[in-house]
Length: 388
Image 1 (cartoon, rainbow, N blue to C red):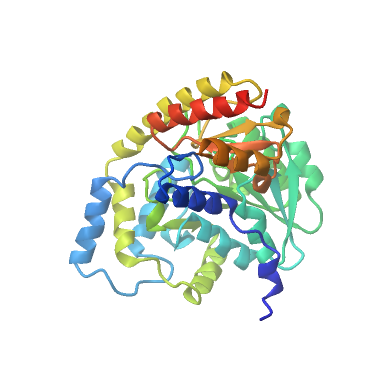
Image 2: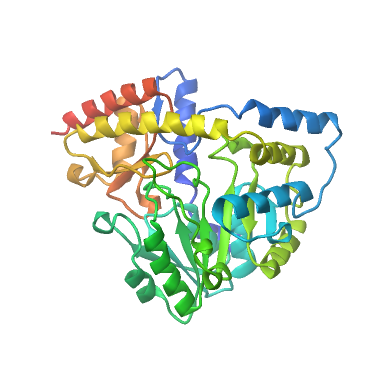
């Protein structure tokens, strides 16, 4: 059987593969400390689950509009107006099967073969693969600690060619946890407007920021940049709804109409009764979001203190999300070797930096309990000492 060329040219998700391996080892009775999954360890808040249960009891089990339940589309638009300063209407919203699906819909709808998409590294590993799936060209722009793992306006401008169509911005970032400041976004927005390209802002971690850091949507910085901005987000991270698979795309009307047509011929509507849970998430109390964020504050502090005390490793304290990007260059192992040996020798699961565009780093997720953090850092310390 000959497979399509497009599928043979993409890489499997390393994060999902390592998470699956760690779970398999746990099922075999091994005591695994897993820092691999980008998934809050909290249960979905009760009022959200209750709304979905009520929707089931009310018979919300049939096909719905491909673009999403009208009430949810309006709730998302209202949230974007209120929280982000983005003047979208319900018609500008497409409800998708998770945040990942919103980005995939965007790529299929927007990118033609040969179009270039600028992606700062380190990047979420699915960005370049999605671009390749539609025969676009990922243009990777490296960043490092000298720029705080952020793309500069000069670097963005230098990467733009006549083939450039889209720039992917992720703030707060997976895997680095960096958050762009208002001033940094204003400078990037000027390049986007002056060079007349589009930007998609992946804001899935927008509610998880620390130390008074402001999360700013680039599209809120003026009408010119707003017209060139696409928002991708969802409910997975802030509301612990990873398995619900509800995301959304917010964009100019023509793009949303086209993406809705695509969705109508692929997945059609998102699970109907689950959308009523999402409505409750947006319209109900936000105390649950703050409770989880405060737990991440404590976990972040605990894991950063432990990592800073381990010889041979270095990291920056993240401003957002729930990841720490750890520099392992001093070990002289590549990230795959490091993660494999750490898992085999100490039963600690982490994610290699290679698929994120940084092979001298690993990603550690602190979306887990403090007991696991302490035990895992003890094991990581032991692993590093064995290499000295």
